[in-house]
Image (cartoon, rainbow, N blue to C red):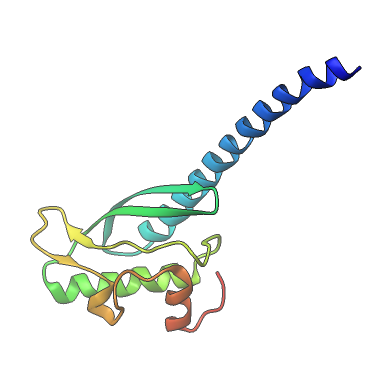
Length: 136
């Protein structure tokens, strides 16, 4: 009986290491889908590609957001609308980050959350606090 238990422990250990991987990848996919949907719902956003990583005890989010704007003022209005969309979107977690920058296709105009009064890219919690929403 003890020999059988000894053989079972390595298998259980390997299984414990394998099981979290699909859970992490599905969490990353959910993150990418939710952030992409919120971003592309904004008029003036041409495209948004998100990459999320949900590792043990933390994670990160990166975005490439292309906007359509003829002037910097128009681009800043798109950023403000995007941040408001994040504040009210369902399914976004408070700790997720917003894009570092928003740029036109030719990168002639590059703006960020700094242009609407944030000190760097805010997370969803900070955006919700700024725009007066408590959850999505």
